[in-house]
Length: 184
Picture (cartoon, rainbow, N blue to C red):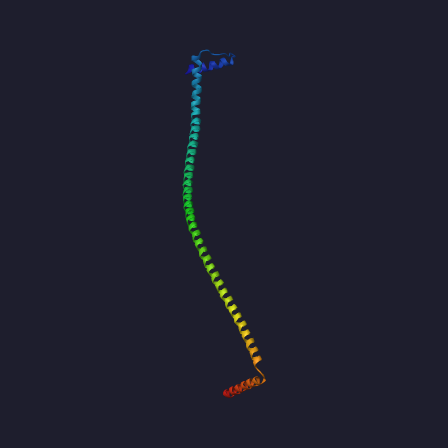
């Protein structure tokens, strides 16, 4: 152990002495320097490197887990959307079917109501025609009756003389007096 310390102290003395140069003995200097550097790096870097790798591993696992959760949620939403789509398609098909049957029903109802309206209009037309016919017949009857009355009055006026006129008035007065006696 004393030899190692002496050699270290002597090498320190040499460097202070101002001698600087390349040591060309590769077998003596490089393996020692490399082993020291590698030992320090491995000793101190192992924890840091292990922590970095563990953190990276955790981030990768978290990312994978999040991706799987997102995938599961996306699959669930996709299934729900497909179920809603199937439901909406069934309802649309029912609406189409019901819509066509409702359209046919409305069409039949419209035809029936139109037919009923036409029948009512036909009945109204027939009643109007009958009323007009009755009114025309009534007017013709009135005109015929007026002409008959005029003719009768003209015949009476031409055939009545004063004596026949007085006798008719006298007969009517007697008839009225007889009627008054019956009522008392």
